[in-house]
Length: 495
Image (cartoon, rainbow, N blue to C red; front, side):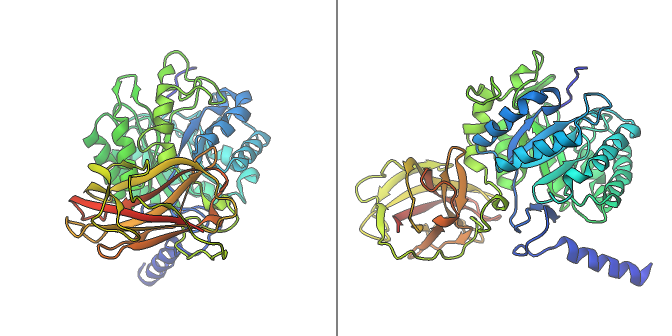
């Protein structure tokens, strides 16, 4: 936010060794976050898609102890924290940063830290000041590579010039690495974050300046970078198509010089697995008050913008998944078969006489209970869906359930034998639990169009199993799927 207050063989071997470093197998644990291709992975080897909020700590230092837990209560998995190196705002010292990181960790939030003093500046000294700040407080950061990501400098380089922007970061990144900071780094695009062409044209050069190849990029989508659907989609695609990782580090629903297409930002980010961090929790002042997500620091009174981000379609509650790094070592996204506790199986939903209050999201028709196919009995739940590139469709029920002492949740699913399903359809059985509506699922499973596929979710991996808020199935189309087909759910059981 532009806040205005105030060599032949040797080269070959080096290339090969770099390749193996950045392509860590997904199942292999790492010491921290890492980038491979255009995907960010956490230390458990799982892809991590940020869904969260910006918090302006540096201007409201006394309110962070209230705001960060409140942000976690929305179900967010990430908080981007505004810090100051002291060159423009009051400096956040190492003790403050340690306290903020503890607060984020206690609330299962990944912390993205950024220095805001260099915002809009073209001065290399401003960038170097931010770099020196990270080096000065590195003792608070080293060892937390699995829970902390460093966004070097907010919106450094205000001019729409990719070449000089790239030159600045190509000298900044090695300084951080030489100081021992091995965290994933985030680089905002030039032009106050709204000139994605800087990444499109020079992002690969900047990435190659990182000896660890652990750098990703950020676009701030306001009226210029996020004003309409085609702009948003091309801005995102032109980064991902270079095999570079991306987040939308800031965005709003409008800004100084015009409207923002927030619906496309949310939907296309979900479609492409691009993370986003909405601006901002509170404290934007009278000029940008419309960007406040909450009317109070404790989050008891969300604004319409906040309600859209937290509760709306493709918002936090619908899409956020807490990193398993905060769990007990079990991966809630794994497809392993859960161990049977020996309890008897109970049918929760059989759809024999109704849809049993289930709903559809991103479905073109339905849901209905039908007698076209059934895993058990004579009926199942059905909805028609319009497939496109990695489209996601949901059949779900919002209902409070207590699954304490239960072993596994199961459902049988299938898709219709008509329509262009491309390389197939995958499905996940999921629940959302606790006050934060934390998402847990069984992992991607390819489903069929004949006898159905049984999905099983290990409930021992679910936080707050005594407070289940939602049960559902997510259906995911392939990259070359298109047109209409149907999906089915039946025989939802628990034991």
